[in-house]
Length: 406
Ligand SMILES: [Zn+2]
Image (tube, rainbow, N blue to C red; front, side, top):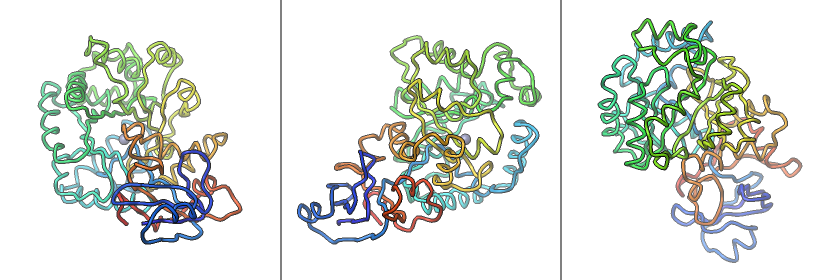
């Protein structure tokens, strides 16, 4: 099949006006000017007209479990109160509700042009019942705050369920809900099975207050439910994460930061940045602009992280703290906070960058010969720059190809 459009945004250099992509099976086999593609390839021609053809978008952090909680939780006085509020909502949900929620979330994400999603689920046992319509990295979200002595069992049980998924990883929830042993077990499995890891880190001021000062609403909340608090009062969350990983894996070569997607990093101190500079750590970073705004966290240190060479992607997070699963909405929210960043760089944060974070730079995120045929189209006129029009696109995506299929 040959797909022609007003412009083809390959993410490899300048867009190709009057461009086309040849697709065979699930693969992109050629991309160039329409005339050249016609000369070099046979097959049915689909002309998308006044549209930009671009790689399908990649959501680097999401919880489809909570699609049904859209609009249900107002911003709270404290982060701890928000956790209480979501726990109250979750207590009313059954496995059937979660299944419906996940399926609705997939449909919504796809409708906004997302063709790959890194999805955290607290219910990996439901995965075999779900026919994901887009490429999905399933991360089991793991919490052992009420049973830290059973960390390995918690992880190993989840791994059994995950093995039915084509792409999977592990997500120790956060330093305040997952024990050191749980993180350690996840790293062991990652080395054994070559999987990815993700966690929420340095998200809120209360998390920083809890670990650094042993005080604040989150500290009190977790102390009350019986969490051992002996790791509080010394280090920042980032410092704790980096140093306990050092102690859990004494063989330096065994550490692989490239396997980690760290979500949030809103609340980093000057000493954290010094540590990052010294440690030469290079994990991947995921930022959720609208969830960030909902919680009114400190300004996301985009420029500082970028200057240190971190690969930064965007994710929607869940609809318990966001209004839609649209990465276009996410790009626009990011642009409002970082107006100096050009639209092509913003588009990289939902294509090329998350593909790299998922170790799929040779399969996803660009329109290039040999990569997977995950493509979308959005309206595009000839006056304005295609990147500008893509980032400002506000609507549903009607033309989507996932793995060569419309
Ligand atoms: Zn999250």
